[in-house]
Length: 341
Image 1 (cartoon, rainbow, N blue to C red):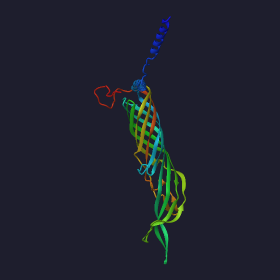
Image 2 (image 1 turned 90 degrees about the vertical axis):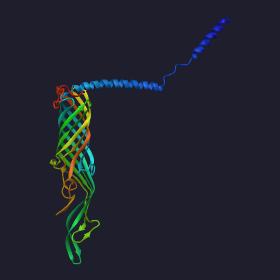
Image 3 (image 1 turned 30 degrees about the vertical axis):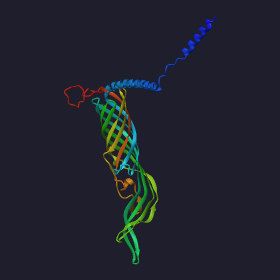
Image 4 (image 1 turned 90 degrees about the horizontal axis):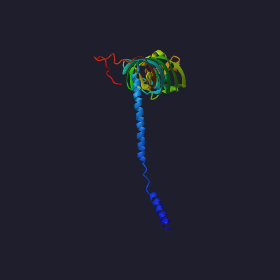
């Protein structure tokens, strides 16, 4: 009768002792994050490797003939007298073009195209002054004299905005390797329309600073009249803006499949030929009095040069025969290509 309680007590002690053993230590949080990062990195790298193998396979299948459609845009300006951003301000430019590219090997080719480019730019000048010569009557005790004198016309502010639409004919040498490509060439720019809107502040006209035949020089012109501020628009002869530009592109290409290619590139166009302007002062004096000229019909600006920088997205289709294994312009004793894709 006395053995049962002892046995029960001993079993209970064993259970108590077994339950008091320490639990296994948990994995540190830092180690878990490291293992998770390694797992994600391995998966991403494996997927990238498969994608790169597929991309190389597609690029090897590219044909010699390629047709592409491009859309682009960025900042552009008609640079006045070679002074970038002074007194001009950057505007906006947009383009669309279609092109044909012939590749004589997987690394290089030539591209010709046809496109349309729109440019909006603004020119602003503060405190424009114009000097002209006219007649003035002088009075003294002996009578009235007519003398030639200088008149100074000061316009508080001058602002003109230009909208130009060009037909463009680009010719580029194309160089490419794997995902990267570049293009260098020229672009003929034939304007369809060039329009301008203007806003001129008030013009103050005064006598001086010099009065001929009197030996008098005035510290400041003696104001005689004021022409009110004015605004409006006018059209310029498009033939004055015909130009040729250096054209450069560089970017990244992605093969959608064996016959389709998507590219994203930075481009820059800088005109080699400048449009020439010039004439009399902004406020011209004639027989009917003073009249305000437009900036590009006056002597305030002598030349304008087209400049643009932007981003261009192109989608192309490849067709025709497979690209030959060598560049026909290279001289080699072997028919094996000198490049590795």
